[in-house]
Image (tube, rainbow, N blue to C red):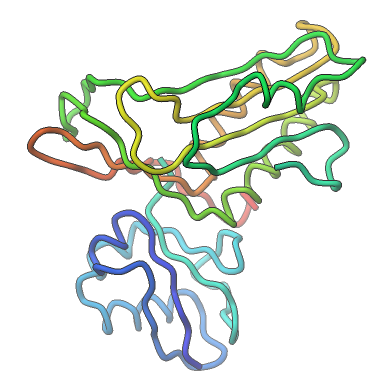
Amino acid sequence: MQAEIRLFATLKDRAGRDRILVDLPEPTTVQEMLGIVAASYPDLEEALPSALIAVNRAFASLQAVIHANDEIAIFPPVSGGSDEFPHPTYFAITPNELDISEIHAHLTGPDVGAIISFTGSVRGQTQREGYPSETIYLEYEAYSGMAELKMGQIAKEIWERWPLVKGVAIVQRIGKLGVGDITTFVACASGHRDQGVFDAARYGIDRLKEIVPVWKKEISADSNVWVEGKYRPTEKDN
């Protein structure tokens, strides 16, 4: 079978394209597929041992089986509402500026007395070894279909831990963002401030950094580098 594989961030840069085609036996495992990808695309080989694999928008182990017509993606570790949720939600991957008042409006209601939010923005100075000391702008990209599914998963995890939390909003901007621009927004609503919303909002942004497939490239005057996380999701994170 011929499989199309989507590439993101570092993998995309190495291949010089965002999709590759490989011929695979049917069925085949993820581990076997990676061997075929390495042989077919040598520029990717060095990055594959640390890469994450998603099959049909879920994290896949090396032993997972791939079938014809599966949606496959390879990427580095991760640096709208739905009727399936019991409370109001708002999830988005967007290149547009955020209207925070509008997002809050999705979470308000007669039983909501508190909304706690986290807002992330681009900073111009970075004190981390291996990264530019001064950032001119960031470039964000996302595996959008899977990213919004994972945002929904985070909301469900929040309700399991903090059942008094009402609405949950998670937004990630993509594209070119300058110093001071908002990049990430997470908000949780509840009847009262003492019903877990502070901890829930903190959990939301931390979990987004672990399992939502979004990456950023830091651009300075003389260099650029993809920022990759250290957390490696497994099938238990599905």
